[in-house]
Structures are given as C-alpha cells and as structure tokens.
Length: 189
Ligand code: HEM
Image (cartoon, helix red, strand yellow):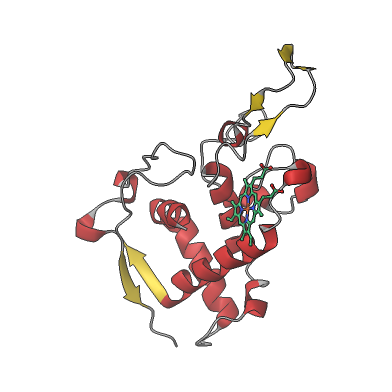
C-alpha cells in the first residue's frame, strides 16, 4: 500500500484518474462495499503495476532442487538452494515495455494467463500464493477507501519528483524511509 501511494503521489495524473474512477463509481455513497470494487478496473491495474514494480516478496520463497538440471546453459546440481529473482524478472526490458516506468495501463485487456511467466508477485507453479484473491481484494479495498475519502498532497511544498523511492534491503521490499503525506477529507457532493 505504501508503494502504491508512493507511485500515486509521484504521478498526479494517475492519482487523479484513480480518484475520478472511484468517486464516479461510488457517486456520494458513504461506505465502499465489496461489490463496488469490481467496478474499479483502473484501481486494479494500479495495484498490479505496483506489485510488478515493487513486489513485496522480491525473491519469492526459496526452492530446493531435487534433481540436477541444465537451465539456460547452467547446471543446477541436485540439492541446490534456488532463489527466483522476481524483482528482476518484472523489470526485464525484454518482457516489459518501459519497465522502469509506472504505467498501470500496460495491464489493460491483458489476460493474466498470458503473462504468468513474467508477472510473478505471487510466485508461480505448485507453490503459488493461495491468497492471491484475498490479497488483491484487501489491497483494492484499502486503496479505494484512501482514494475515495481523502485528497492527498506532499507536506511542505515538496514536489512529486522529490519523493524518494529508496528500498530497504531485506526479505520483503519495504520503503527505507517513511512516506509522509497530508490527507484532506473529501467533501461528498
Ligand atoms: C499482496 C498480498 C500477497 C503477496 C504479494 C503474496 C506473495 C506470496 C509469494 C511471493 C509467495 C511465494 C510463492 C512462490 O514462491 O511461488 C506466497 C506464498 C504464500 N502465501 Fe501469499 N501473498 C500475499 C497474500 C497472501 C494472503 C492474503 C494469504 C493468506 C490468506 C497468503 C498465503 C500464502 C501461503 C499459505 C503461501 C505458501 C504457499 C505454499 O508454499 O504452498 N498470501 N505469497
């Protein structure tokens, strides 16, 4: 959620579009219900793009190879600890156009089955995350509420391009420094 808000504050046009979507869909309703979230395709794309650019588990969960195999010209001996660099795969220029840019639109009309080898924030194969739908719905719910009920700005006249995107080193990909934003309650029509 922190990374999603980071990218939204760095890209005011995307923030504007996302707020317009949720405010139009909710139309003055006070409480967001689960059924409302299905009407927010742009928000869904923002979350996918956040997971692509900032996967919470950049190395997934370590694997242990049972057999010796040859892969991409390398021999991986049986018993090796294999780490999958999902972060690098999801920023690979051969899979992703302008991989370094934050572009939720890239997911428009894309069948997730077609990108299951390159979009892997939830892992893949038989140990893929079983909480995908729960995780996606939870994130959509929180982000929809943040965008619906509040307008957001940076403190002290800070500019969007000045927001730092430094990542902390560790098993999960968190921001190194806290993201500090000013929330203003939204006045419903
Ligand atoms: C944004 C939300 C989430 C992300 C990004 C995420 C990501 C991941 C990743 C990368 C893995 C390792 C998959 C692999 O190595 O191939 C994993 C495994 C797992 N996740 Fe999630 N997850 C999320 C939410 C959830 C939720 C909400 C639940 C449960 C309610 C959950 C339960 C699990 C479990 C049980 C595993 C282990 C599966 C196994 O080893 O068979 N996750 N998740």
